Length: 172
Image (cartoon, rainbow, N blue to C red; front, side, top):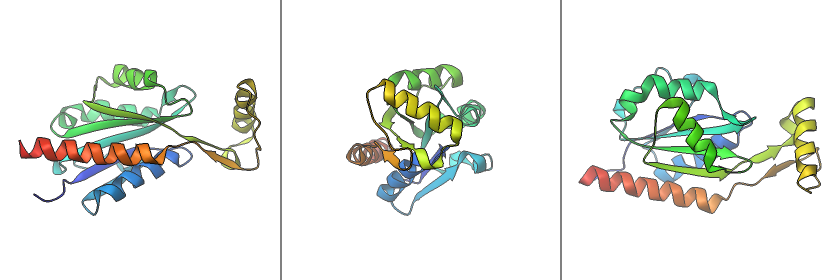
C-alpha cells in the first residue's frame, strides 16, 4: 500500500508551528501537503487520507481562523483520520480541550509541543511582555536572540506514530 496522502493545515504567527508541520510532512514524504490557514479554504480535505490541524497558542488561545476552519469543515474532517497539534510555551493539555470546546471537534489523536520565544520577531509590546513572563519564572533572557524549546524527537515520534495509525486504519 502506498503512503497515505497527508494534509497538514497550520496557523503559525512566528513560524514555530509551521516548522513542526513541515517536519512531520518531511517524515510523511512526497504525499504530504502543508498549507497555511490563510490558504486552506480552497483545499478539498476529502481528497486526502489523513489530516493534521496544527496551531500555536497566543495569549491563551489558538488562532480564531483555525477554529473557524475546523468548525466549517467538521463534517468532512470526520471522514478522514485526523489529529490536532497544539504548540505553546507550556505545552498545556488544557489548550487542546479548549480548542475542542470551541470547535466541536474532539480528535482521536493529539499532541502538545513546546514552541519557542522568537524575541527578534516580536514587536515592542510582545517582547516586553514575554521578557516579563520569563523573569517571573526565574529565567534570564536576551531579547536580541530567539529561543527554541521544541523537542524534535517527540515531533518525529508523533509524526511516525500518526502515520502508522493511519496506515493501520486504511488497511483494516
